Image 1 (cartoon, rainbow, N blue to C red):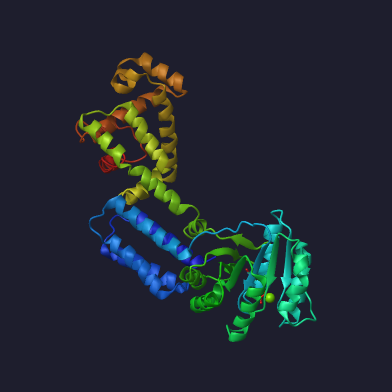
Image 2 (cartoon, rainbow, N blue to C red):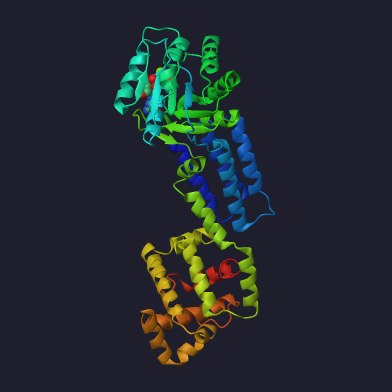
Length: 460
Ligand code: GDP
Ligand code: MG
């Protein structure tokens, strides 16, 4: 579904997240990629320009820096795309609902009416469908056959050519159902005949919902078509069909945004079960790669909790860096997910990542997890002044036992703690030789760089 757009969006967010510097060249390139992808997906051109202009402005705004800028841009992109996708609307059935489906010939009205019938029937409602497409001889037959497949009541009259008469003749029967789907006729184009017919049906039936059925591949003409339907009828929602068979749903989506009618269902195949409710947020998450954006945003947020940064900064300035702080740092890393992701999120460190193998990273993550147990087994005094641990070997074995780790691991943690403390305090007194190889899975130089970057960010 919308694979090309999805790929570009994923690439774009990756590019933003991984960028060392969001310089003008990179921003220009990102904007160009975005514009091309959106236009290729048939999103309305002026809308594309509007979206990208805002993103560009914020990307080049020098008042916003670093992580905040990345967060800002990704947030903006998300917001703009969400606005394009429109509001979420789910139709809860009240008593006696009638949904009238309108749309051009071949847009998927009959198929969709069956899909929706099944959707609500499965949720325990009594559902029927009535065929009012009197222009095509095969229309009633199609509806009957589909109805049989999913076992719902179908009302048709192949001999009658007046749709209003057909409706009136079944009106009493239809009252017994929770939901009646009205399948209407379409035309090749939106002409006066069609408008008159659906208008008068609308007056007679007074449906609770008028649903416009639009195929996803309709292209840029969607906007005009949707607007005309909206002028004639009060369109309460849109069904976009054939989402499975096109990479260009942008036209249909733009149209919905423009006429302010929410997409309620999307059709994703020919079978009655190929129907999904439309949730703009999860649709977008899927476009961007499942959950990507949300988790990325959460990660960025967990990094820049300003209050916490200020608090810890103040502590550090007073020369305080205890095992409790160390614990918090390790926890913060876990929040971010992995060391790997962490490096991505910190400007300038994406490159460092390339030099670290995946196994090294994983072993480092396991190691830090065990360090948390070690810290949990320390007394308050030990946490405040970890150097006493080294001085008394009985403490080391007690902590190792209590945390289910080894004395070697406890020693490693204390060494690591001292290193970090010194690095964070400005790199004084760092005995590089004491740095045990592999302890952080990265070289001393990288560690130093990392600590510097963390200062005021993660290692506040
Ligand atoms: P109507 O003229 O508006 O009633 O359109 P139909 O319901 O008869 O559908 C026209 C064609 O589109 C049929 O061949 C359907 O099987 C097909 N169709 C409808 N919805 C979808 C969909 O979501 N995906 C795919 N691939 N085909 C669909
Ligand atoms: Mg039909």
